Every structure is written in structure tokens, then in C-alpha cells.
Image (cartoon, rainbow, N blue to C red; front, side, top):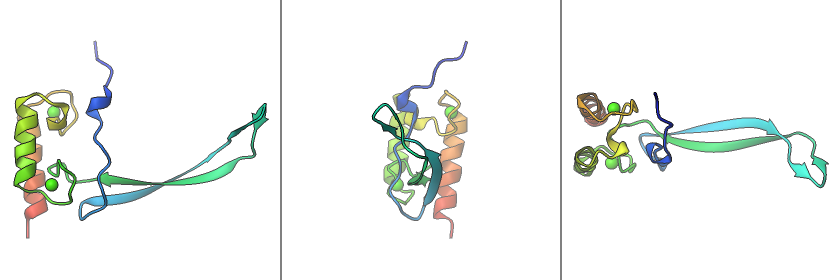
Length: 107
Ligand SMILES: [Ca+2]
Ligand SMILES: [Ca+2]
């Protein structure tokens, strides 16, 4: 039986930086007005995501502080160390961290 994902599994949005990418989500929705609904309106929201798994502190760089954060998270079984988001913290997450770290620091 699977378990429901918890809010702690969700990472905070990263600030814009070298690894940050901005997405613009557009959607059409109505607003409640009195006893009815408004006309349809188009909304656009800017979403910034962090594409570097090794940048745990979301500062745009993969560095020693991230390695320490990953180590700390893994040793306490924190969901922050579950980089592949499969619900387990194992060598796959370590491999993901190392690969991402190397990619971020490759010249
Ligand atoms: Ca970092
Ligand atoms: Ca995992």
C-alpha cells in the first residue's frame, strides 16, 4: 500500500540563478463575484524551478555546503536527500547528487 506524499517532500522554489529556470504558467479561470462568477480571465504566473539536484541550498552553485547538506539530510533520513523522489534514501540518491554536482562544476 502506497503512502500519500507529504508536504515535506516538496522542495522550496529556488531563487533565480545559473541553475534556475523560469516557467510562465498561463491559465484561464473565473473569480467568485457576489452570488455568481466573473467573466473568464487569463492569468500568468512566473514559476522559478531549480534544475540542479545537487544545489540543495538553492544558491545557484553546487559546492561544499550542498555536500554537507546532502550528508546531513541522508544521515537523518530527511526527505531532502531523496533526490530521485522515489520515497527511499539510498545509493541512487548519492549517485544523483554526485552526477549533478559534477555536471554543475564541469568546465
Ligand atoms: Ca548550492
Ligand atoms: Ca531516493
